[in-house]
Image (cartoon, rainbow, N blue to C red; front, side, top):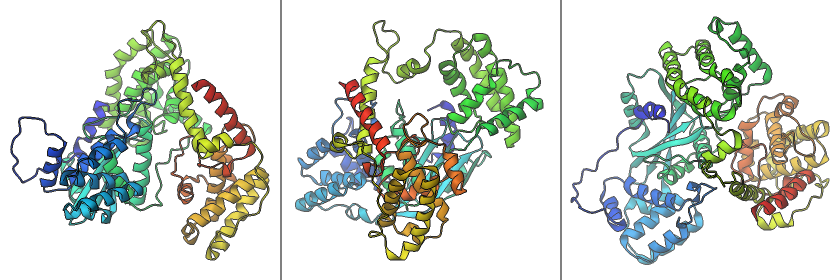
Length: 590
């Protein structure tokens, strides 16, 4: 985590309460049983839950670098067996906490049987932990420069034990969880502590956030962070990740995540024109259009806003992105800091950012420019080799190293995992065929009668889109998807909502599953905005989340292609591409 980000979070990290009980001082590091005993003696349930969370994180493969997994990492089954093998009150308590945080019904039933056989007396809150409920409110703390947000959510455990999670979602790295911690106390008490700590910081603001939106934002940020290389580690993260995920799972469904701003080419061109015509650009030397690189960075990286500039964004741009991504003459790149200073002042002026923050951001350019000027004059890696070195796959100091050999096999393994997910498993991937989807009628049998009219309205719009923009296979895929959604969660159609939005979401999901928006893919392709324009909407991402969950898929909109876990919605062209990729990646992995 950037030092600047750490400083910006200080006001939102309230101190944990200390236990009122005095404990004997030990001269040795306590073993697991002693730590459980201390946790059970504590005034709050948090210590035991944190211990369970830490152990679950230890066995969580998400913490591995996919290119160099830890061969010594124990499995969850090994953890459980070690606790089953020691039938003590302490291990029963830890088992109960681990089972609760696992969110695994099979594991919970297994642990419940084991604990019942032991007949150990557990704390009331732990025996009734399944009755924990989320508070009906959430809070979001934001900063004027938009580097990240703190989301605060609370859960009440049985017996009157409230817990509040503070989750920092950092946007410069793709809206991922960069830090999180859990403290005892209700939401309003923790928010009051936060407000008191930042009373002198006018650039921070807090406000209510829908708990459903908080759930989606935290869940997606955790997933993205788990796939980021190298993974983020702090004093408390990802050790508290299982605890935070359990608390988040208690929040209501139906929310929306962060939406990446759309910057079409004409809007980017207009921004460049306004800057060049402004007094901020007076005297700026940019004969080779380095501004286009700044706009590329702003629209395609971080949160996707070319007008959002902070010291952290400046650091990333000057010390990593330009030296790694831009191959150009030193004379061309030398002008970067000067252009950036002018562009920051222009953007902050248009956005109404406080002058003090503008000066702080410009000062970051001054701070990082000497190192930047050194980097652009040094022998440095570019493109894929730089990325492989950053991931630890390639050692540029090894004269015999092949930067692609080890990475090729690792990438193939990751790609095959995605193909298995798209096909519905290894066996389904082996048996997949490339035949076209058949013509078939809409399956009304699984759709409740009271939503037939609403579903029919959406169906008419979907079929019109398939007839005008797509083809017969897409019509079958969309019919199947709509029927499955209506059968899986008919409440979607009992609530008020525009049929056009739902129809657009159905076609968008089917399109994502079949690489419709990938211009290099076989079969028909188009831009998302073309599909949205057909329905007269600007985005379907909000509605798509509900539809995906209705068919058992967690939303993840970052990729050009979306895996729905079954070939049921895949066209012949998409399945043929999967088969081709399957054979190619299997050969690479061998």
